[in-house]
Length: 463
Image (cartoon, rainbow, N blue to C red; front, side):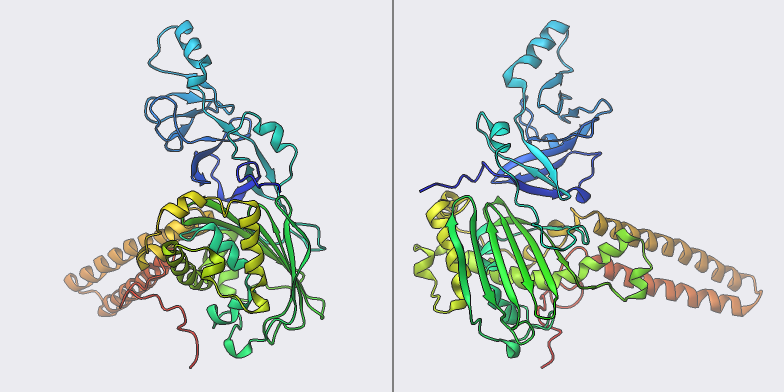
């Protein structure tokens, strides 16, 4: 039986739209810290995130005008091939050349490619990663009659692991219950899946394909296909009898035990443009940032269950097939994915770490943090936060001006109505500033800003 190699594969690590090319970017994959940066020739490089001098993180450095990456600790510089080019404390060309030609001064680099708007990396430490990577293609969006560029990529990094994340994506029947109150999901609309089956063979390199029918009264007439392409891709296609078609391209990148990076997009032949006049009047980056706020409810619901599941699993001294009771045909996706891990992939990317360490239960503040989950990575959400900060700053300046006008009117009786007008305007601006601060907070946490610090996952449900 062929054993799957977790390192000898292409992983998407960032949408290009999320990367700032002017600074180095840190990324963790398979519990390995890497740094992403672009040189003066616009070539993306991915290398170990550690300087060979004293192991400082290169991602905390800077990109110089000559296109090299400078370590912030002692100024050592490296080119896109990982070779050291400058050691400021070495005097003399011969000494510098000797040190820079030493293998000990070089940083390990990894194969990269750009495909469908994503930066991909081949995170293998073997002596032939570039040759090996040429023999395999990344799991990109397949040809399916839909425009793959019609929507943008979305990325977040969540405090739940690879296995439970991908497992959940092959478990469609949870949606009616876990996501009650979102997109029409409701337990009352549940329809048992009448057909759930594997199509073709299951293998280490090609994964598996599943087909199933609908699971609620709205989509019960659809045909669904879910394809797992190792190491981390789930391509799901829904086709309805009325001609509607949806493709969900989802990547679950294992970063470290208990954490996973999600990259995904949904494309369709249906038009779902927002009719919100205020939102549509904003520039695209701000519009995108504010629209991302609507994604958190579903994500929070997922986190609440998957994190608790993962914590419990890590305390059990038994395999999944003994811990799980899976009597329904709807459970076939879970079983198939778990069997693939068992038979081909050593139970997962961090099987040794998982077996030796119990996952610590996170506080709600940690679990539902939005800054570390998404906002810090997303340029649109960061732009929205900066925009709101500027509005608050201008509001403070305008409030001070109005206060001064009010004082002048009081001290120098001109017309009392001007004092009243300026006072009312100042109060309105203060109230608006408070509202802006409330909106800004939504980019930082799912915990309520006021009142009890409890995330209400199902507050919109009418009882």
